Amino acid sequence: MERTLQKNLNNLLTLAKEKIKNSCGNVVFYNEFIEPISVCNVKDNVIYIKVKNIFAKQTLKIDYKLDLEKELNKINNSNYVLEFITESESTIINQLPDPKKVENNFIVNQNNKSTGINSNYRFDNFIVSEFNKLAYNAAQTIFKDKFWNPIFISGGVGLGKTHLLHAIGNEYINHFPNKIVKYISTDDFVREVYNSFSVGGNSVEQLKEKYESYDLLLLDDIQFLEKKEKINEIFFNIFNKNVSTGKIIIMTSDKEPSLLQNLESRMKSRFHSGLYIKITKPDLNSIKKILEEKLKESNESFILTSDVINYISRRYCNDIRELEGFLHRILFYVINNNLPPNAIINLDIIKKINETDNHDNLMKYGFDVNPEIVINQICAAYSINPDLVRSKNRTKQISLVRQVCMYVLRQKFNMNYSQIGSFFSGRDHSTVIESIESITKKIKKDNKLEEFIVNLYKKI
Image (spheres, rainbow, N blue to C red):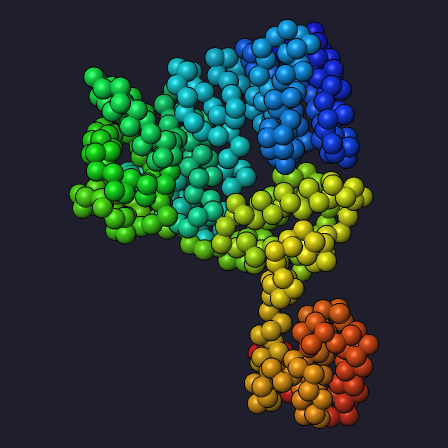
């Protein structure tokens, strides 16, 4: 882009920002995320605006895009469309020579056939761990001489199947720039077929020919083909033609092929004919790696305490999209409350952010080992009902077990006194301190008690 054009467009953008400043309603957000934005590039009538991070991009797109476009075009009597991009995306756009370009984050190849591949989802920001390693390794085979075709990947909602498909598409285009790649969700494919039905004539055959031209077809959520017999037949024809001619098909589903209902057995058999891989539920360490990566992407300097990291990792371990959404809520809280750089986000703040989660859930998810389980284990060792230990019962034996529980939660898990007291009918911190000090003194005098607690540590 010419420097003069870029300067003129930035001047227009500055005027447009000033126009919406008063209507923004959130001074902190405006100063942090709207004021710094600048023109990165322009292709045809699309102006690419560089923003701070993914959170800013999503918020600007939803809440401010139309107002900025309106003001900018009114000032210049033009018809520009604004697209918000992050730093990494701006690098991609600036490096792509014509006739390649990026529009709305979707790559368009040299023959101007949209591939639907989202440039945000790449292998360099795809976390590979035990739960998805097989799927990742299977995907890598298509870049080698020997590969399986088709590849069928199943897994639960929010476990990264869509990210993986887009990453495959991006990498394939890099390896084979002259090949034609298509990503599409099954819902969109179904709509395309229905549109062809409604148009009539030769439109269905034309649709099939189009799909048969793709060298790599990435079809997401194949389970939505269930109970659609006519569309199944069309897809089966496309599937057979592409596989037989060496075109690659990679599909995802929330079910394994044999569990897909109302699909012909011949289609299920073909799905199994290549390579079937399952993405399993991620372990805690994998989720923490993903959380760490998402924090880097946010480009913010707030600090999560270890119990908050545990809370988020455990609370959202079944859905990575929900985890990402919760991080956006934390980021918005930081911005909206004008917290300083390197602000520490603890469980008290998380409680304010996630009001739907009660105290028990915060405690349950916020520690490496659930404190409730620890209490139950200690009570079992003493053959005491845990409910009595949690109650206000003050009999000598119950009080002793309660004190041991408090001591272990403090020494083993470094919980603060208020947190410990919350598990025992809300006892205050002074009572907890006295209990811990009492056990500390008893241990010095009683070797058997010390040995008993050491053995408890080993079992937890």
